[in-house]
Length: 160
Length: 160
DNA sequence: TTTCGTTAGTTCAAAGTTGTACTACAGTGA
DNA sequence: TCACTGTAGTACAACTTTGAACTAACGAAA
Image (cartoon, rainbow over all chains, first blue to last red):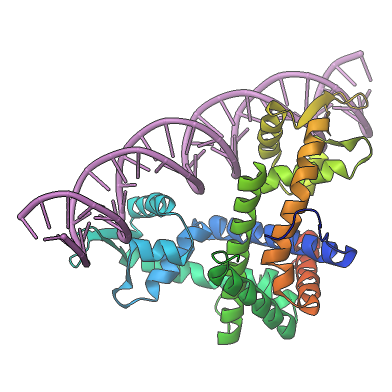
């Protein structure tokens, strides 16, 4: 990763932008998490699981696909899904095609919880993010983070 | 907070931008955390504590000021500082001005750890964020998140 | 000065997260 | 068909975070 003697410190402008970004994203996700939790009794992770399932035929996904999609460790997903299953939001069924696999699918109750939660969560996102920015600012934000995501997906293998 | 019947769903563009933002920030903070942890043995929270202390005269701050600054609960800060104290990075001293208070200050060892960590962390931030964007994009990102932060600080009291 | 509300920080127990180790099955290839 | 390597998911133990309850001290008002 290049020589270790030369450090390219952040300029004053970069430092400011970096701190705004770090603090802003941290506080934003705090607020969104708290609002979702207090109004709907869902963590953002659980909400995310329900959203992903809702977008599939049969409202069903393999555990590993879910884990990859929301960038959680397998272990963490197992715990999350177990808790959600205990509350009747999802259920697990052995996968017929691959006996190692488990299909996670949304229950009717899970669907209802999602339908109730979605408008509230969308409103939160609007209130604290989308409507705070101009449409151009928000699109630019999306484009920038898309570039970052892109870089991270392709990136860290070939440092050569 | 307005009537509950009308839901302003996100447009397709907004949805895309929101998902890029959410996933991008999540994956970015994951990577930065892992790199800092593996190269320096510090969590980003611990690093942040050291940075804040390093910027003060006497490299000392009150516990509550630290907690507010990095938006952590008091409880969480107590735990974090206890762990850091056990590793010799900081120390706690009763506050002479206010007998309820505790001053947290950085040790010489804490300083050395920070000095070693800073260039590596800055390089991480450059590699995965700053250098992935154009300077204009990065400044725009900072400005946008600054607006969000601003809104959150002033915001949630007066919805009238 | 005593009482009351507030602030500072810690403690405790419950819940969530992490990484490793483990079991079971799948898909090669000899 | 047998071993072998890889993949799917869970179990376990250690660690971190959360929120509420608690102790102690400050500051103001009666």
